[in-house]
Length: 112
Length: 116
Image (cartoon, rainbow over all chains, first blue to last red; front, top):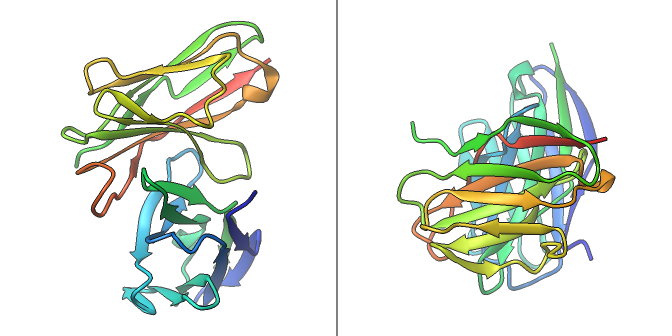
């Protein structure tokens, strides 16, 4: 059972454009929603995270939008740059041991 | 900047052989995680330690996988015998102050396992 569904699987954006990645979750007990960025051959690195009592969080060019009633959250990358080309994973935390459940990832390519 | 260390970075083995991966978490991090990441998928938790104790190994194939964190610091993940389907990236992560609080997980670079 996939508890966090991520889309699209891949995304191609022109430099300067907006990249949008969406995630949906099922478990209402999730209490923390991070986004990770992963470059080839590297481990995932935390990019930005949000808690469900906030509808939006912005850090530089990266913004998380959170819709608790729809059980959806999304990552927006403004002014996308070729250096943003990576795989992005959404995740959700819940359970007695604060376990992270990851989406399947989105491969972002930003063309120069 | 403190980092999670993993070794080896790459491992090629034949099926039925034993393999072992090592992880050294960020100093002071009480919680350590082992994940498996199949190509094109997100990481899936195999085992979670709080200090030296296992707190979640529900997704660990215990017939062939084992993990230990004897002194509550570094950890070893073993597969014996390895199977073709075990080919994946094995990621270690750590967090502080434990399973509560912010719980940001810091990942190591991973060990890429190929089973032939």
